[in-house]
Length: 395
Image (cartoon, rainbow, N blue to C red):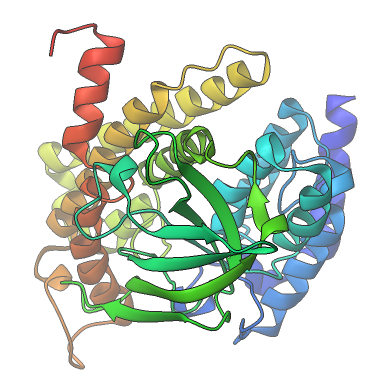
């Protein structure tokens, strides 16, 4: 059966994956989906439609909710065959990486039917409303309020570090629905449209020159009650589970660190900048560093795959998310330091005709990688979790 499925996948990919989707993906062609998605490459739209029709944008999700219904083994085969042809991701989505798994676990059947298929098809671009000014690491101290107004909640407050909030369609948001309850209790999990009256965003410029993060403001935003996920005042349970998915997603950045800043593989960059023509590949220290990075990438990927498969049979360990997040963060940062070492002065450009676009992008991605230590829970927080909950060290 396994060999049969592999052949089916190979045949389908050969017939359906456009040639331009088998090349490194420029940042400008990344497909995030949503109602404002612009396809600079028409093949990207075709690739998304074909993958979504198969359910392979979310291959292990149930078919009932737009997924592919694949087993863990078949999903592994699909991933291997996609990598063999260097296929681009058909869709990048916080809905796939974070919200969807939480909805599968906690949402009602009606909510799953409403939101999950649209996530699989890339029709809604989501952002995450968690951190607030003064309440980042202490997330449970959040102060954004949602007051019961009969048939809806009235939301007031603000969030910060909301990735791509200015481009998102909907937000999954933690709000306080009982100010008198202990801080981990009176929290609820709401979904609402970013076009709702009273929602506004302000980008926060980073050292890399880009503005993926925003501060988001809510002023008397009306949210229908049927958009509450899970039980009222029990949103912290959902929040913790979604944080696990977020940290695994961020750790995955390190897990695929064989990719360069421009989407090119680390070994390809090494060949271009330190290969036979450059002569630097003869340096044993550089060869050792490149080989070690690739070996660590592979070991990390296999560890994450094993953890995912164990979770499907009830052997999940929530603390692994902190381990993966910390290690993946460090692995990704090491990758960019190695890229700079490999590329030499070609990695230090900021603008101008003297540098290729991929070189300028690498510089910005190197600076961007520093934020991995902060987002999704700082490295210090992850180390504390590991120390207390894994190693059993005293406070």
